[in-house]
Length: 84
Image 1 (tube, rainbow, N blue to C red):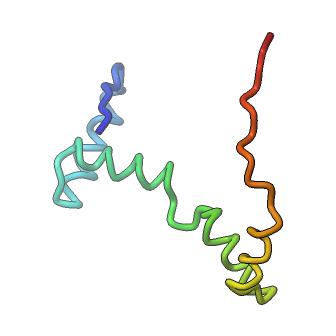
Image 2 (image 1 turned 180 degrees about the vertical axis):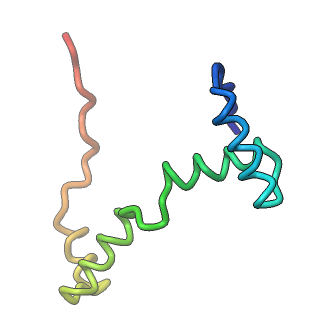
């Protein structure tokens, strides 16, 4: 798990974090983790896999449709990019 330090946090912000953490029954560090998680991973974020599955359900794709696609797809691995 990663970690980092935040320097030069204004006193009023630090105080507000401590108060907010106390209201939620957490330590300040745990409160900061919760805030960061809520900001960078909101519950309503677009989840690509779920979106693609919903499209497949909406248009009625079945496992048999995917089997047909796999049988006609070129399975040769792509060549890596070259920067010569």
